[in-house]
Image 1 (cartoon, rainbow, N blue to C red):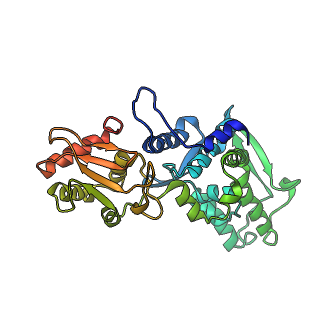
Image 2 (cartoon, rainbow, N blue to C red):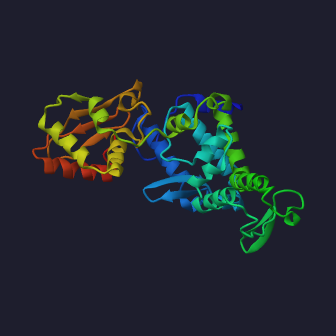
Image 3 (cartoon, rainbow, N blue to C red):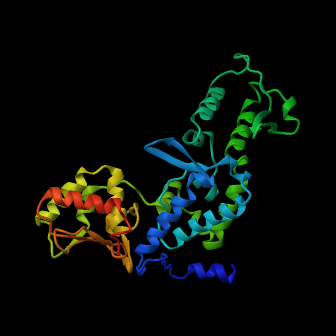
Length: 338
């Protein structure tokens, strides 16, 4: 590893331009949150979304290799993944199972494709379960692909355009077709991602994890268990029986999952929770549980200290007032973070 990259193993300290905040951990979490959103920004064409509006994942954009700087960009993505893992920060995203399997060097199957391309999966599934000769299908060991108006023939084996697919050899064809789908279009991009990761953290350290374990390590979880959140919250000046605290938890109960994420982001700098739950929220000196502290007057908005996972909550005199002030603060993250 070159000396410049070795510097990335030192304590991660972030300073935003034109801001006075000192990074005790919260700013680096906020930075990682912002970086992950920029990496996934559609205008950069690096990743595409798959799935439904409320349950989507990210996958490498097959057309990204057409971009002039795609090698440097995907190497950067790999380094950011490595940094997040090394410094125990979360990326605010979820990738496909195929993406994680390729990093961990685990074999992919056609079932994995269901997550990113249901039509392709259904087609392969039909081929497996039906007799293609009885169906009268005329297929060969190749396929046509259009690249910006240019139609190309992709051969799955030498002279594949002249080798007919039969019921006897169809499983060979399916294996090659699935391998092409999983690897061919994004092979180079993934190679640079893996190289970028390896510049920060040894791949052997990662390849002992299962897919689920690796995803939780990289992305945390967004399943906000309210009972767990309450159980592992500390109070300063307030206590659990204070009326403002009762209103606070009533407010959290009323929020959608998305808005609970916004609230958590406002207080901690991330929308993600460790796989072990709120008891292991990380702060400036290690584990630092969520805290609510009495501060200010009812006329001011709440403020947060993301380095310490602390919410400064004024002694509001009604639920409606607390609800209104918190919603404003959550929507304007950055203005009320210290």
